[in-house]
Image 1 (cartoon, helix red, strand yellow):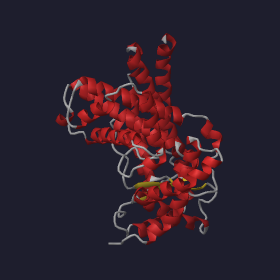
Image 2: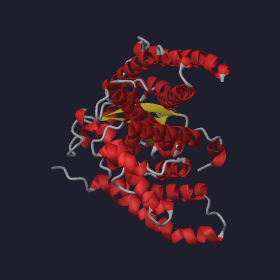
Image 3: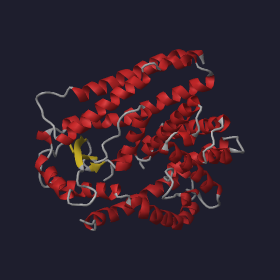
Image 4: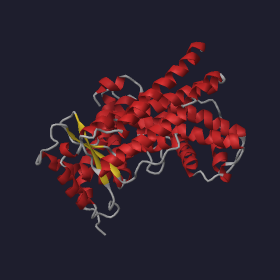
Length: 253
Length: 142
């Protein structure tokens, strides 16, 4: 246990340095590129969150002298914070790569203007980031829930509620036709934001899984892992079937 | 395509559980230090966290398969979340767990009850992080 206690200071320093690096990447972007207002908003927020996180862990090594229960809990908190920043980290560089010359700026603006016609989305905007994948992707608003809770832990401002994140293949920054898929991703964002899944898809998925469970059991695949995998597949299918319909049927008034 | 289900999948759900538990611990500890009751501080988030766990525990105690207990109303509604609470409950040796949490929800401020809640959330955080860090996700392909 003494070894672990000695190691705490190193762990704190390691996390501090990591967050510091992320923070500096957000606060001093290259002068050679320019970013959309939504991207700047995203970088500003990450910078603020990083500053609050550093302040939160600045004197964390004091826990090395705590009793065993408190010490274990402090290390767990550090582990949780590290995991949260690990998830956040994956969006920083891809967002920095998507400057205004490397994203379909005009198309995004046109689609966002269209989205603004929908009730509840009048001020929504999107930060575009590049992905290594061929797929387009939107970060489900529920995923920013983790950022919101991290903000609560380190006493930071809340993540902007009207800011979404959409990923495009890094080779398609200046393409036109393929980027029409952005409309689908914006539809998916609207679907998730309106909480349609929680009202409809979960029931549908649970009912479908209930019907499928007997077959899975017959194949001796009734472990929790398999159940979770089936749940996810069915939720995904349900989501795909409904997300575009959700946007089409959204009320404008 | 939702990134959360492609790049990290349900791992991020486990992380959300861990973060929420940590936030609840933080609030509970500040309340314990201030020696004030829950009703004396307007903390809707803690009330929501406590209520979610209570609802999840009640759902788990009812009969039926685990996946059928996903609720729209509870914050711990995802399969991974309710699964984590279920696993923690099985190893949490306090027969009075539910009454203690309900006492806090109804405005009680006994130190013992708060301590129990802190230990419960701490166990939830550790279990969720354990699942989040499970290396088997990397090769599962799900």
